[in-house]
Amino acid sequence: MSDVKTIGILGGGQLGRMLSVAASRLGLRCHVYEPGAAPAGEVAWQVTNAPYEDAEALRAFADSVDVITYEFENVPTSALDLLESLRPIRPNRRALAVSQDRLTEKTFLNEIGLATAPFADVPEQADLEPAITRIGRPSILKTRRMGYDGKGQVRIGEGPADWTGAPSVLEGFVDFTAEISVIIARGADGQVAAFDPGLNVHREGILRTTTVPCGLPGKVTTDAVLIAARIANALDYVGVMGVELFVTPQGLIVNEIAPRVHNSGHWTQAGCAVDQFEQHIRAVAGLPLGDGRRYADVVMENLIGDDLDRLPGLLKTPDMQVHLYGKGTPRPGRKMGHVNRIIR
Ligand code: ATP
Ligand code: MG
View 1 (cartoon, helix red, strand yellow):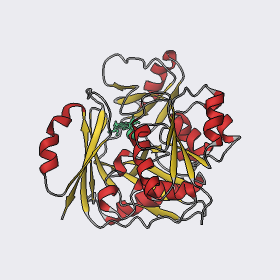
View 2 (spheres, helix red, strand yellow; view 1 turned 135 degrees about the horizontal axis):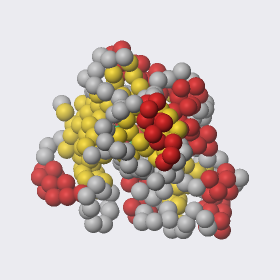
View 3 (tube, rainbow, N blue to C red; view 1 turned 90 degrees about the vertical axis):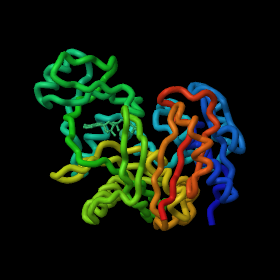
View 4 (tube, protein in one colour; view 1 turned 120 degrees about the vertical axis):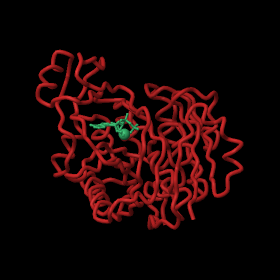
């Protein structure tokens, strides 16, 4: 059915770990490539612990796999260029390039007719004041690259504005009524399957909970799925993608795209026969996709930092699925695991 036996995963965090588990359930092997600590390495078939600049290690990694995917979108271009000359990379380089850079991402989204927050390019600090004049206050200054969990962001209110220290975009503040996300999969044959949109709650820039169903009218959820499908098709995407959206009285606004499995899709582990991790593995391995249907209501909660102290109680709670990532010491803001509570 598919010639893929071994999947290379760039990045060895919890997403890579859960992808590896899903792959092994389908009889496939994963080889994880990670320069730092690799919770995924504990469950993968092989792990290469080497920098992204190590051409020899990259070549050996590529030689040992049939296809390469990633759980982390900030892999350096030079490493990707080398890997791409040796094995297919799924999702493709364009999807990665678009989502690595907030300016490219927003420009692409507008080009395919989707709404984003108003934005301005701020290459250096001297460009900030004119950008604020154009976009207005309140607004959010975000580094173009490498941001995650709200890092690299400066909120701009009435006072003087701080600088992020790197080329940035200034985004107008969106007065949203809710944040939702769509986890969508697209196969190599163009088949698309979406999971139900989830309602996301953030605290201090970090996702705390995702709830399905999201409680919004069918028109909103259908529009959200259609937006995600439009993005996946425009990128000729293969794999699972997360699309974060703001719900506003004027309609849906795309916040950002993650070209990978996404934290707000963890609920699928308890709510669907084929979860987002298996779905991604199926897509990149060229297997048929699951249908994405949801058979339970679920609340996913991230276990961050010393939330782990609640573990004894969580383990005793009925209908509670506990996932731990095998990371070392809890630190404030560090994602240590998550729970999926099934609501009957
Ligand atoms: P993550 O890794 O969680 O996706 P990130 O670092 O990529 O985060 P964003 O998704 O851009 O950051 O922003 C994090 C959160 O900050 C958003 O989910 C939202 O709650 C808030 N936020 C970001 N941009 C805006 C905006 N333009 N207007 C209002 N709120 C915003
Ligand atoms: Mg985000």
